[in-house]
Length: 126
Image (cartoon, rainbow, N blue to C red):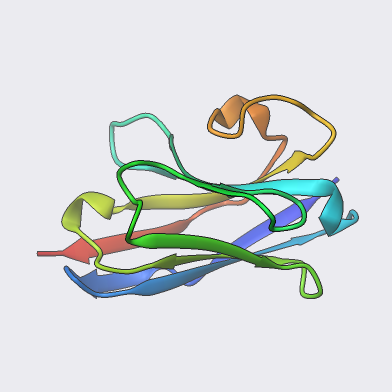
């Protein structure tokens, strides 16, 4: 079992920045690729970013490329999502998720991930 906890959400004005953190515990952190997803009211959960177990490869949704960055610190069992130039349409609950590195499912599908956090709210005002 992997326990995932997100933090760092909040209210920010358009154009501002936030950094989300996600700590995963319970199993060897480097056995997991990690992803960030978000879900706005009445919308489906959507892929935001993913990073492989070593940090060697990262993936970003087109909607956040050039504004968001995903990184991880394996010594701290933590993955980060740096969000810059935030827009009102970025408003959502942001979820962190863990996927075994031994599984070949695609990184952008929520169903590929086994362990999820409770989410952290990000609200961007215009």
